[in-house]
Structures are given as C-alpha cells and as structure tokens.
Amino acid sequence: MQDFEFKTIIEPFRIKMVEPLSRLSLKEREEWLGRAHYNLFLIPAEAILIDLLTDSGTGAMSSKQWAGMIDGDESYAGARSFFAFEREVKGLTSHAFIFPTHQGRAAERILFTIIGKKGKYILNNNHFDTTRANIEYTGAEAVDLVIEEGKNPRSEHPFKGNMDLDKLKDFIKQKGVENIPMVLMTVTNNSGGGQPVSLENIKQVSKICRTHKIPFFLDACRFAENAYFIKKREPGQAHRTIKDIVCEVFSYTDGSLMSAKKDAMVNIGGWLTLNDPELAAHVKNLGILTEGFPTYGGLAGRDLEAIAQGLREVVEEDYLQYRIASMEYLGRHLVKHDIPILTPVGGHAVYLDAKAMLPHIPTHQFPGQALATELYRVGGLRSVEIGSFMFPQNAKMELVRLAIPRRVYTQSHIDYVGEVIVKVNEMKKQMRGFRIVEEPPFLRHFSAKLERV
Ligand code: F0G
Image (cartoon, rainbow, N blue to C red):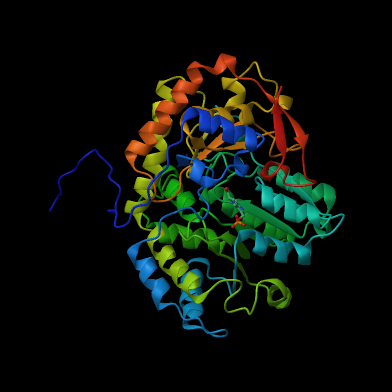
C-alpha cells in the first residue's frame, strides 16, 4: 500500500538525555578570544555556545551503542567485543586483516612508518592535515591530485572529490612505480569541502593502481556519507542499498584507514585494514608498540562494541537522509542571503568561502581565521579555518568549515547558526586580518598564536 508522503525530513531519533549549553556575554567572548590569542582551539569548550569545530568524535551515541558499552568484554586478548567489531568491519570492507586503533591518525602513523621515507610519494585526492603530517614526518611527499573542479568553490560538479585520472597516470609515469608505495582516496574529500568521490572514479583509480601493482587504500572516515551521494547523484545507483554501495567501494581497495570518530559514530576509535599478509605482519608488530595487543588496539572492549553498533546504524538510509538534509538546509539559507559558500554543500559540513566574502583581507592575513574568530565573537560559534593558516604551503582555498556533529544539534540550533552568519556578513567591512606571532613546526593551526593586523 502506498504510504502518505510529507515534505519535512525529521530527525530520525528522539532525545533521551540532554546536556545544557552555556551562553556567555559579548564581553566574556571577547576576553576569551584575547586569552586564546585568536586561536579557537585554545578556547575551552565551556565558553562555546554551538561547537562546529569538528564532526569528529563529537556525535551522540544511540541507546543501543550505550547498551553495547555496558556489555563490552574487557579481556586483554581475544575479547568477544573484538570479534563483534571485526565482523562488522569485515562485513563492509571484506579486507583480510582488521586492526583496531585508538583513532585515525594512529593507523596513519603505523602505515606510513612502514611504507614512507625520503624519495617516496603518497598520492591522494586531497590529504587531510594529519595524514599529510604523518607522511611528511617520514620524509615522503604527500601529493594532491583532485580534479580541477574540486578546487573551484563555485563548480557544481556532483563529485568534486574525484581524482584526476590523467594527472595520476602522468605522475606514475614521471616518478616511477617504485617510488609510489601507495595511492589513497579520501571519502568524502574533507580538505576539499566534504565533497564525494564517484563509484566510477574509485573504480578507475583502482584499475590504474592494479595495472601498476600499486596498493590502493581508502581514507574511509566518511564512507557512508559518500555512499549516500553515490546513491543520489550517480546514474544507475538509486535502487541500491547504502551497504551494497559501501561494499562495492571497498571491493576496489587493498586496505583502509579509518577514524571511527566520524561514520562509525563513536567518540574515539579507528582502524587499519588490509589484504597483504606481509604488510599485516609489520602492522601487527608496530601496533603492539604503541596501540596494544591486536585485538584491542588502543581501545577498550566497550569502544569496539560501540563501533560495531555504530557501523550498523550509519548505513541506515533514514539517518543519512536526515544527515545530508541538515547540511543542505543550512547551505540553502546562506545562499538565499548571498553568503558565498562552497557548493554543492558537502556531507559533514558547510564551508564558507572566506576569500569571496572578505576580499579586503589578503590571504597572507588569513581571511578564514578572521571570519572564524568573528563568528565566535558575535554568536559564540566555533568553526575551523581550512586555508592558508591550516595549510601554509598547500592551501587551495580560504574556507571556514562549519562541521555538524552527528545527531547532536536540532533544527533550531542550525537556524541560530544561520542567523549569526548573516549578521557577521552584514558587518564584514569592519573585519581585519591576522598575523602569526608564535607557531610550532607542524600542524600549526592547533596551537599558533595570532594578533590582529
Ligand atoms: N582522515 C580524514 C579525512 C580526517 O578527516 C581525519 C580527521 C583523519 C584522517 C584523522 O582521524 O582525528 O581520528 O586521528 N579529521 C577530523 C576533522 C579531526 O575535524 O576533520 P583522527
């Protein structure tokens, strides 16, 4: 029987536990900005009203995930919770070896310690900051090969995360297979605006890698959101289940790096999966040094249980429909008010185009940082600059990311966020840029201090 249809997409859950928000005065927020040297990472979370710094580890777990936490098996070796975790991860990736890690960058560090060194190149659509840093730390070079449309905030290409196949082939030819230990693909492409990669592109990259016998890994953090975009945007995919698409994507890969803090909907966790037995032996040995015995890898049994359940929930279409609709809802509101944003809106965040919004602030004075700090000053919002401040050498755009935590904020919170951005846009002429007064040798955005120009 045909069911009734309604146009409102509702949050597909109800709320069982609440956490109060604290609202500071304008004067208090200005004081915090000064004390934090205009670096939003240095402001305590209690001084933030709506925290859109990241969608990583900030989601709300479901009642079933919490039930799994209570039921977790905390045995040092061979815990039941490990096998529950392994079953779910294998069910999606089909990879032969599954190693839990305490988060995504732990998997990166282990993998790149083994395969990276001076003279080697790791290719990707766009490396995320920690991935790039972990590669560069070994002496290897991290190379970004996203398609040109992926660098243009205004391009309406449906898969702006795609890798440029010609650039990939040329690069392999130029530098030699022996100097390219791995090709990665980040889904969705976080540094490029949370943009999806098409199934076809993944298939083609895999084909090129297999021809040259170069391992092809997925940086899989937001694999479910990516699959939802494939279902909605790629011809011939609409009838498939999300899980089916996810499994096909992984089938083209030889391994994956994962931060479970994103699409496994937990507050901590990650994994490294792969097929190559020799590489797996290395990973196991290195993992024991820093992560722990391979059946817990830096996590408690309860965390593994929560990941297993999160993986079952994240591929539910109701959830993904609500998730992607929340981003689009905020994006539509901003476009209606002529606020320049990166379009199409990404899967986990809305990215403001600070360069277009603040043409009077040159990139070396960090227009993105100017905008992010103003959003905090005016409305208590925390966002993050993804531009010349985060990537001193490799910034493609000057963006401010408003990442939406999973299942945390309601529609009225998002309405408030929209109102704050519109207000800031009205006052943009008064905004000024920044200069850096102190910075660490890498990943400077986490701790650098700034002052107003
Ligand atoms: N890869 C991508 C694409 C990521 O987005 C992240 C984290 C990581 C790897 C590292 O994972 O944090 O568990 O160690 N991104 C977060 C963010 C921090 O805010 O986008 P991690």
